[in-house]
Length: 155
Length: 111
Image (cartoon, rainbow over all chains, first blue to last red; front, side, top):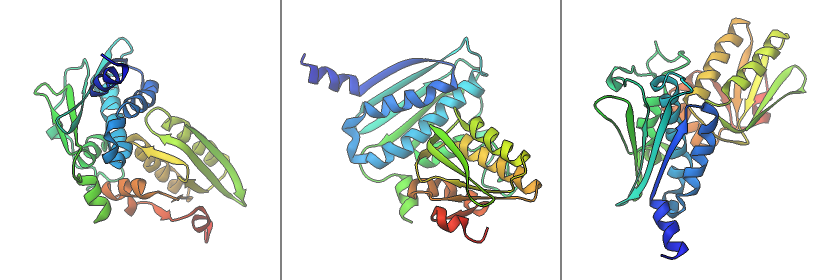
């Protein structure tokens, strides 16, 4: 296998076990985005939507999922396959019910400091799915066509 | 990522957000602004000319600072949001909460 072929293969699947440390999120996100150079046709969504959503998923996992426990880990799996960029973030917590998260844009919630993470992920990514336990979120970006963010931005 | 806090024009404290405003550094921004507030400053402009992206905790810290500054009868303004950042504020409806100027110069006018 040539180096180019190996790089292509690596670019299609990245798996990390991250320490439960908020300070490592930015570097992890930048590394993932740098390895997705084959996705430049969706450069804007990758540059902004994916970065923000991945930060949200990782910070939710470390803060709420793992309860800031430095002994716990967060698993990040990134795959580029079949026209979709998929990032799955799994923590070691008990999980939560994403349907119970209130709408942060209502007047009673607008002045709250927190509560916008899941909302942003849903707005910025093409698909967001949780597992039944609620400790693993999958973010999906379609690599062809425009997603919800572009629609919003040009509306 | 870094924050540059300075008083360029009279009594307005200008905060430049360099890089990202996210969960890993939001407390740094909060502490810097609160220190100025406790020191007597009441007019703040946060400029995003050199900002890459903001996450929900970055938005949250701006909301928190806005409340604390208003409690002291001060004002927080934002400026120079690029298209992506402005869309974040629109999606979350925080564009209704903040006074957002297109440029730093516009943000400093009529403070």
